[in-house]
Image (cartoon, rainbow, N blue to C red; front, top):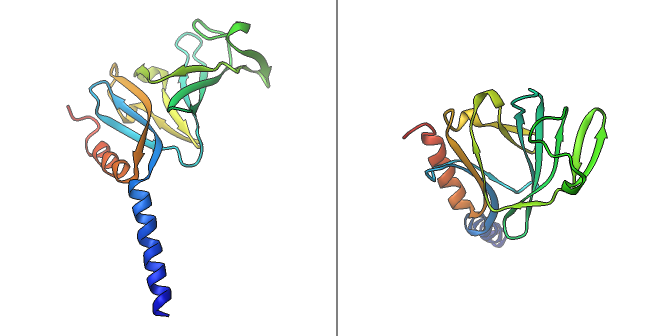
Length: 172
């Protein structure tokens, strides 16, 4: 019985050490001054989306991304309900289709190391990961820039940086 307790204790310590020190690819959303406001470890999948309201058409647009090797952000497709200025539609930009009244441009394969967005409340901007919305208004003020990148962070870094991010999103 004592031997089982020792083995269980060692396994628990092992898993804690692995969690604290093993790097996990994570979405890191930060302000332009480098202050991290959101960390999403990509544990449950590598796919995520950016959603916004088109400024002219006033219809939702979703850009779909996946983590690619080397922590590259890969734009795989865009979906929207109506054509508008700035929305991709040319065959050279991907494979265009109309599905259930939604325009979809697939196989875009655009690579980014970092993406920068200017936050405008009227656009209702948000990140979506595993069906959960992370609206930008919770992380910055109108007109501020937000940068998204993928970083390898260990569990200890994720815990500390997430705590710091919650401490004061709107602090200067």
